Amino acid sequence: MNFIDKIIGICTVSADKIEPKSKIFLKSILLSYFSIVSIAILVTFSIIAFLNSHILLSVIFLSISILVLINFITLRSTGNYTRASILFITIISVLALWLIYNGVTGKQGILLFSIFPALLILLLDQKKGSIASLIIFILIVIPLFFFETLNLPARYTLNNNLLFVFLYLGFYFFMNMYELLRVNLITVYEAELKQAETEIQSKEEFISKISHQIRTPLNNIVVITNMLTDSNIDEKQRDLIDTIQASTNNMVNVVNNISELSNVDVLQSKDYNQNFNLSSTLKNTINLFSNEESNDIFFPLVINDELKYQLYGDPVKLKQIFLNLIENILKNSKSGKKTINLNVNKSAEYNDSVDISFGVSTKDFVHIPEALRIQGIEKNKKLRNGAFIKLLDLNIANRIIESLGGTIDIEFSSDRFDFQFIIKFKKGDTIKEEIKEKEEFAEAYALSEEKINLKDANILLVEDNLINQKIVLLSLKKSVKNIDIANNGKEALDKFGLVKYDIILMDIQMPIMNGIITTKKIRSIEKSTNTHTPIIAITANALLGDKEECLAAGMDDYISKPFQIDTLIKKMDQQLNIVRI
Image (cartoon, rainbow, N blue to C red; front, side):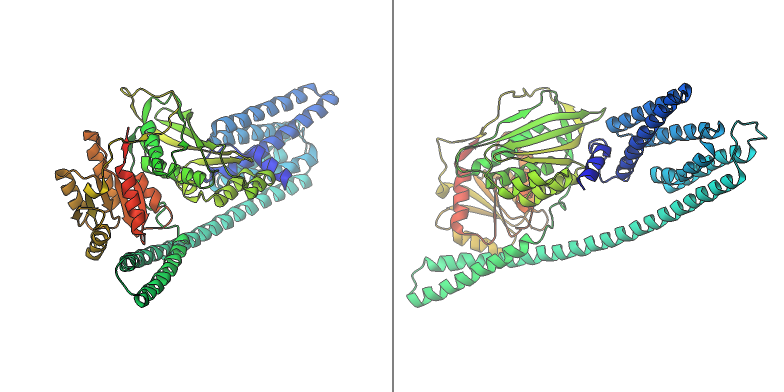
């Protein structure tokens, strides 16, 4: 198996040249394999001809092998499969016809060329391969049956010729039948796969809807029982409330387990393609981790100086990738000071687009025996990356990268984690005013000397459900004096334009305008005033990717229902007492 993997590895064209999911990817492996085999055979024939004093024939074989080698190298460097396949077929066909017309192959050697239909139909599609096979068949049959009329040096017997015709046409019809059955089978499988994906999507949407509907009233129960616990009640009442709390906590665990089974909405969010500054996008993403309790996290960021232009693409999805990566690195990192290095380089450049290579690494990873076992045993890079993604819970980042046409590569050692991926972006406008930083970028947040007291803060609650509004108001009654309410995103924007708020509590699913779009519009407004209002998502959306989408949209923190009121107050206090620099 390892030997076969090595052969496939040698024959595989780099993923940044040919997309692994494209139809020509497997064909490029076959073409590379046929090229290597052809080179080996041609060099062998060249040596045999030389030893038999057939110098001209030896030179021809050697020259053809060099042409095939150049074509093979060009395929690997450019990824142009169409040109490489046509050149390979042309070279081999011309050589075969020359050998046949000059009688070099001999009576039995001619039978080897009966496999041409298999070669042509495999490398080309069925229609083109069939036409090419018939053309070559006619060109081969001419010297076989009319060598005397054409006064050719080749001499072939009738029995041998008929056997060749039988074998050639047999391969021709067999390969056409094989391709027809293969295409039909793939069509059936694709239809079944699409149907299965539709059914899974429907089930996941149902789970998402049910989860949201359960979490909202469940949160209300949690908050009310906590408030009752803090009130003056006797022991019997307290015991009953404790029972309610225990049952509620069990229900919370059940809902969380259901949510973990669903991957809905990871890639369902709308694309936000636009011109964006890569440096600012990455720095703003790093800034989100200033909310960690410890200030011992450092993010050295190095961006190649050649990237002197904006990029056109989806900065939200790019943020989601880094949020998922960094969160899981922190989750698997040693305690104490941590350094997560981010490196951005130009992998390849074209007229209107550029391939960007992103690298995330750390030496502060915890010892994970299973990861070391995978690194040591699994030699196939694709399988190894898949095992790491599953082990380290990097499914969100992986799915988004693949959706953007990117490729990933993961390396793991006893104390180091390296994650690299390449994504193609269109070129945007040239950056004229920004001075690119060459120094390492650490923390972009610092503690403010003048802290805002939560009690005196001006809060905007964006929530469409009247019961939820009442629950939040009751919960924060002792901690906050001023809370305005907006019933949807549009109403929140209207209030935001008239009043200065110190913090915004944002629901996600709302009529007229949801929380994601509202946040993006607020951040767009703030760009012109160079201000930043902290936004915390308070939502019943707690499925895979929901947190990343909220943070990538511009929110500063996230809390899912049901939550403890102390946790919300702590998050609000953290946001009020940091300043962006």
